[in-house]
Length: 155
Image (cartoon, rainbow, N blue to C red; front, side, top):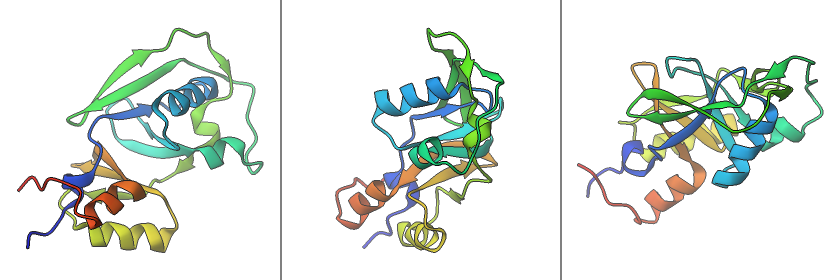
């Protein structure tokens, strides 16, 4: 029986935002893509944080007066390709509400280990990195698919 790896179940086409992406753009992306969190990356595609629905609705962080920009990234094969949303800059930025220092995992890790990391840190997603660059994201639903055998193993 083959070991199911994170690479076998992760989402490779990732939408990510920059630290100065407006909160309005973050909310639009979460809604459009029906996701509950989005990685925050620098211009090189290195993960610097995560914005989740909890971060957006939680009262633990204040939003500043600085304007955020309607820019986000599509991560493909570790490359961050910027895209601009047709909106105007608005109050609040991703960096003001994000959870910094996101939990990351390597694509070669077994899904059982990824599940242990999620449980021990009480998170719903892990960013998958290769040489410090974001190459995917793995969620609890992705892991469940792997455990249920509903995945085509790539190796």
